[in-house]
Image 1: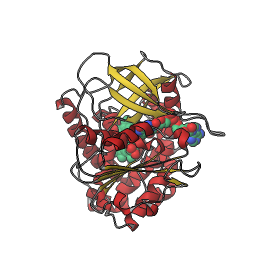
Image 2: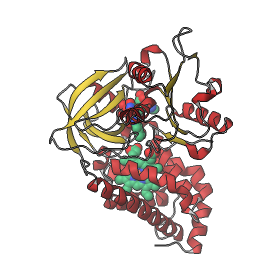
Image 3: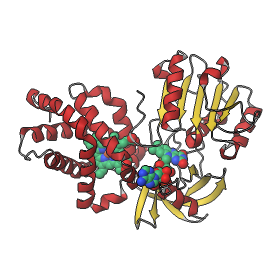
Image 4: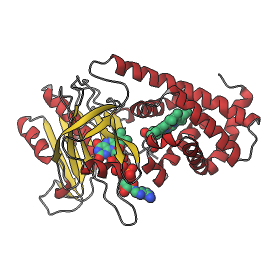
Length: 400
Ligand SMILES: Cc1cc2nc3c(=O)[nH]c(=O)nc-3n(C[C@H](O)[C@H](O)[C@H](O)COP(=O)(O)OP(=O)(O)OC[C@H]3O[C@@H](n4cnc5c(N)ncnc54)[C@H](O)[C@@H]3O)c2cc1C
Ligand code: HEM
């Protein structure tokens, strides 16, 4: 259904109200929806609910949509991100009815506007339009999964075939489908969703994990950082549950998806990661190495110290085999000589040969880390279009 000029006007008039009330509104909306549909507690990330991140993220999406109501195409990349996330969580078209109805009732209740007010009708039309775009984008991804050899729809049971401790906080899990079937040749950089029972909640919870290796025929590998309690904050539910599981235990997994992946293996590629953000970079590096690609690769990594430097032996072994693979490491703490730099990563300090002008740049790590590297890359003259970002939280990466 397309919006009338009057409805567009009403939506645009709502932007300042949304700016002021957006987070409160979506917080109210989540509580309302999860009370009415407790089954969705196993779909949504309750960790984001407890930190407020999801409320901020949905508010952000609604606001961005309202601001761009006359030209929704500017949201194309945000739509792709949401659609892959939704597909990874098995969100289906009928779920949009539930979200839509709860969202509209929440706007009505929070702003004290009757449901038959033209403003609510305008929002119903706007929501319907956005939902339609998402549903059709998601359908295309589901269709692709259905047609990809070895891929699948829905939750598939995998056995933890092997656990490998990478360092004091990151452990790799080698996952094999219990049905013994084939696996897809996914794009290095993509992620899966994993669902486990969180004892403390008495509920299953899904989370996304990037596949940390190039595609293999008999297993998928993820590498999970255990989120320990920090001060007042409790530890992470799913990462701790996973670390507590044993080889032979089973978990549920959705098919690899995501729009952050190695685009062009013939160009120079620069991988810049912070902490556990190295998982997609290792997958992409391995894909290049498997294919014996001669194009230059810079593997730039920052972490707290040597103790939490994951997969260093692997990267060193790759470098020893291939002259065109170079690395640069920054440790926040350590002794001179432990890493190329002791202190925070500052790309200005790198030899320029590690940052070729025509390379593709891949960035993943904590938000402040990505924001800092993105800014420096622009200062170094790298075009925005060459910089690709993956956020391990929700809501994408706000770059300004
Ligand atoms: C596309 C994608 C790929 C990812 N890939 C990887 C990967 O390869 N490896 C990896 O380790 N992770 C990855 N992640 C992150 C992963 O999905 C989880 O978010 C992460 O493991 C934490 O989940 P959790 O259930 O353990 O923590 P949650 O229970 O979700 O908690 C999240 C954080 O909040 C803190 N917290 C607890 N209470 C509060 C509170 N009251 N207020 C605020 N904060 C609180 C917790 O200590 C924890 O650090 C990825 C995420 C995405 C979106
Ligand atoms: C027009 C409707 C919708 C909009 C605008 C929207 C928007 C978003 C956005 C912006 C994200 C964060 C993406 C990211 O940063 O990775 C997200 C994630 C998510 N969405 Fe939606 N969404 C919509 C519909 C739905 C529906 C119908 C469901 C299912 C009932 C749903 C369930 C989820 C879940 C489970 C996540 C993962 C993050 C989390 O659990 O915190 N969404 N959505």
